[in-house]
Image 1 (cartoon, helix red, strand yellow):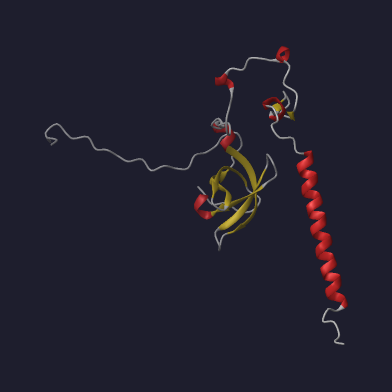
Image 2 (cartoon, rainbow, N blue to C red):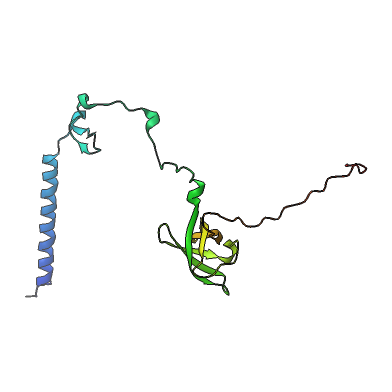
Length: 175
């Protein structure tokens, strides 16, 4: 007689496939039996309570409160423009490299280190100078601008060149 082509591993694989099919059929029958068709609308509804949690019970109408639609804020609240004195900060130059043209200011208000470029200076500074400055957000982060040496309570503005306008004399005509 010829030897059977089926080996032991083939028989085991076939048994595993049959077992899997039976389990799948049993699960399908279980789902069909437990599924309730034709649920009422009330059974399918979900409610949100006053804390924002989803529940199956409707909210208590006695706890209901009126909300004005204009009082609702959707999105991010707009920030008010900062006061001018909040823009002007005080700090100490912790590092400044004159040859490369940049440095850092340690903000006295929050001890943060703020980058400063030589283009943001209104006058020459060196390390350990107390300065006043404004913070400007750039694509690389916070940067100090309008940096000048702090001279106590009095803030000295940078010299601005005034344009002279000559008035015409009586005998000249303006066209």
